[in-house]
Image (tube, rainbow, N blue to C red; front, side, top):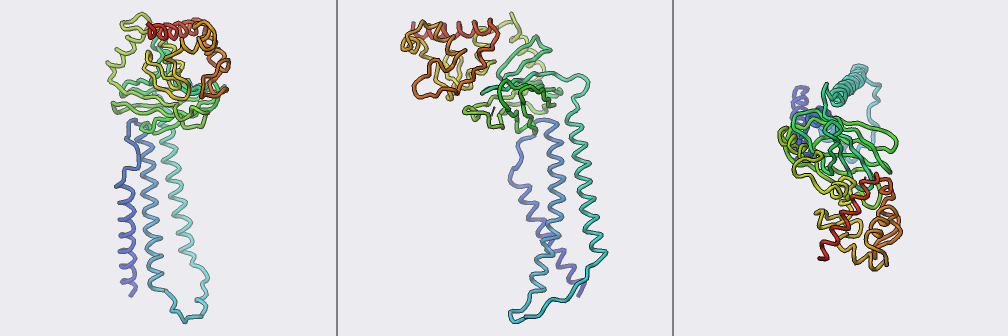
Length: 338
Ligand code: CUA
């Protein structure tokens, strides 16, 4: 009889484990694994999942078996037999979870330590989060600045985060980690991309009206392509861009404003294609109107938009960047009119 019970318990627990395993494996729960750090985090995830499936199978088997075997008949009004505990069982259900939780703790600690180790020669990227855009600066590569995060495949990257205004949070799902950017505090994150491709960069901390638009891309490319891109972006290099367009991109204007000349499509703020007409409505010369709208965003509010949405931080742009930006916006507006 006992042997029959054990056999039944084993069959039920294998069945439960099979169903749980299928549910864990068949839908693609996790994003594509594009960094070594994500691989390690996923290992911890699967390690914990395997433990959970084993425990679920045992609990499910005992529950189902007990319901089927020890069901009281409808007219049974008796108390159950008094039970005074079972020392062996109690030791087991204390010791086994203690061992499992310790194992999870050790595995997690090892993964955390390895994931925060950037190695001897990481590529450094300074990341600035601001309402409502990311910008990336490469201090070891002539301070090249970009609105996209470009990374060479296979090299450890150390991201250093700063926030200009409020708390944001940097997340590339395929890289497997998040990091908050906090005003007045420098935070860091190590990423070692292992797959070529383009992945979304999203802000995962509610940071204002344009939070949902605070997105850009992380592009993982071969080292040679990355080097060529750095050369192209470096000052005076071939294909150097309009300095005002560079400011438009790096300051993140395009994440909120649509402007044909910058190929941006943001919708949080008014589009910037008809600035000349709007300056006329405001009764101001075009250049003065553009400059004022950047450094003092609430001076003129476009129809259908609210005051207090555009950050006032653009008044802090270095003088030459602000001048280049104003010139770029004025030129792009004038060239449309012609
Ligand atoms: Cu920045 Cu949400």
